[in-house]
Length: 382
Image 1 (spheres, rainbow, N blue to C red):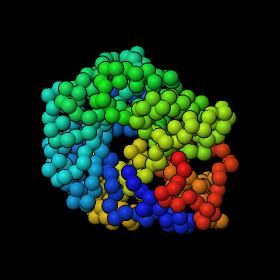
Image 2: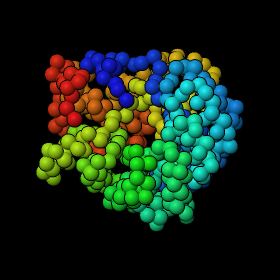
Image 3: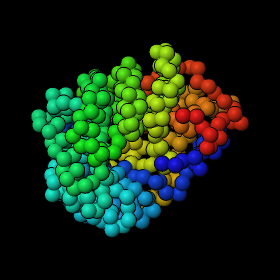
């Protein structure tokens, strides 16, 4: 996602970005239901009892999203393929010209369905929680889920469709990312286009019962060392919302060579929630993060444009006043030289739920710069 045209270098609350008239991407929860019980899930456990919205209601949300001018929808859940009307929803999105992607646990993706989804150009991400059935099934809370995820990738390959794999480092799958990548490359070749390494935060079930599953700093650093190995070997790996100054501090501690540090930094992606992205719950209510609670009315009950620009919680999030001084200092007009490549990592969660502070604490010696010293677009390091 190209975002440099949105950078202002205006270090005043609410002025750091030129907010576009329409978000580039909407993350839409299709359903509250799921047939797995991942302990680290960002959805509260009680939500799954709410079931599905009606197909008609979900189609209406997709239509309103397209009419708003959004270019892409990423369908999430719950497990989106559990919704009985998901194909009608996706056909509607395709007819409206939306780019569409979907993340699934793979349990419902058989070859016939994969063929139909491939014909409408759907991009599909399959979630993996480990490189073997024992680890994956334990984290998913369902026996046989690893083999179902493997079968889903087989179905996508047979349909000549592209796929990516979403992976969440935890305390229980430490060190398995490399072996998972090896399995994927051997069995599926170029079908799996990239690995999306997902940050976990204490939302939902993870806050209630799975907090001990979340990796600590050492666990995350080990995961990033695996990411570096895979990136060097030619894998495209995307890692979202890891503070760059924290990575530099860890690399300095371990005397990591500069080229290996650069390989890690090249995989990092900032979170653009509330800037170029927004999440919607199954009723069309906005969320500041896929794992956060909904707020305000549904986009079916009011103008989405008005919500996008006038919702107080959205505008408070854009002020980023919860970021520490090593990221930005409004009082002095200074910001980190890598601010726009990082946006503070997942410290943004502190702007959504106070208990969800980022476990990756940044060092206190970030290279703060005056606005005139910040690297200009097109020449930023990393």
